Image (cartoon, rainbow, N blue to C red; front, side, top):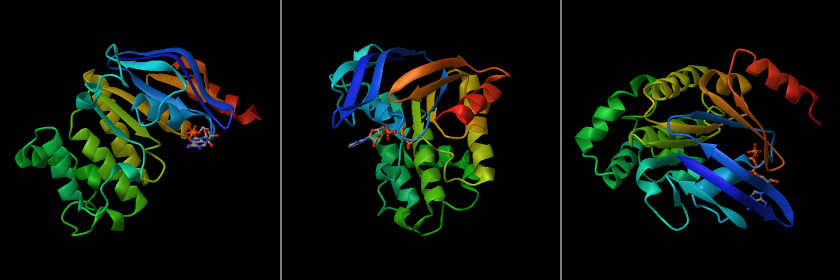
Amino acid sequence: MIEVQNLTKSYSGVRVVNIPALVINKGETIGLIGNNGAGKTTLFRMILDLIRSDGGEVLSKGANVVQNENWRDYTAAYLDEGFLIDYLTPEEYFYFVGSLHQLTRAHVDEKLSTLTEFFNGEILNKRKYIRDLSKGNQCKVGVAACLLQSPELLMLDEPFANIDPSTQIRLKSILKDAAASGNMTTIVSSHDLSHVTEVCQRILLMEKGKIIKDIHTDANTLKELEEYFSVMQ
Ligand SMILES: Nc1ncnc2c1ncn2[C@@H]1O[C@H](COP(=O)(O)OP(=O)(O)OP(=O)(O)O)[C@@H](O)[C@H]1O
């Protein structure tokens, strides 16, 4: 699904991403972890062609994301509030996103009805602009806007960071169901080792721009990662 080849990015002469080779297969659920500044968001931004690499390339279904825009049709991402249109209400935003993907209002409503628990009564019919929602509720809007697109590739940057425990549990369940269906490839970055090991079949550990561990999750993974981070300088 995604292939990264010799990808590099530097800021002020410091390499913040340096990935010689990485393949993410269709249907995989990937957890991207690493301490602050490891390069996770920069990698996300290059996969989404939001910033340009200094060298190398990202291929999505075999096509370079910089040269070919087809990936935009099947990719949904929520990295931060900058992905929202904050002067709209959530409903207006969902219908707008739906319209970009040829979804009627009825389709959007149908999709949203499957997210009632995830919204927990705080998103729809509140007559609030997105900018007036809490950070956690803005995250719910961003994630929901991704899900209503039924994307083949879903990318979420720290989705667990601002949402409450109930929503974390619901989001994990949504991601697990998607993984079980095999129809969606998911890349989730997180600082919460417990959440990512619970949800993701494969964990990529970044340190100083490099992927230094590529682990297929098993019963020992959480302990292994906790030990790794507890002794890291
Ligand atoms: N636009 C920019 N200008 C200068 N430096 C940048 C820029 N964007 C990112 N960096 C630097 O690149 C490095 C990697 O940042 P990045 O945001 O990718 O890390 P991260 O792993 O997502 O971190 P965090 O867990 O804190 O979100 C950091 O040192 C950061 O300061």
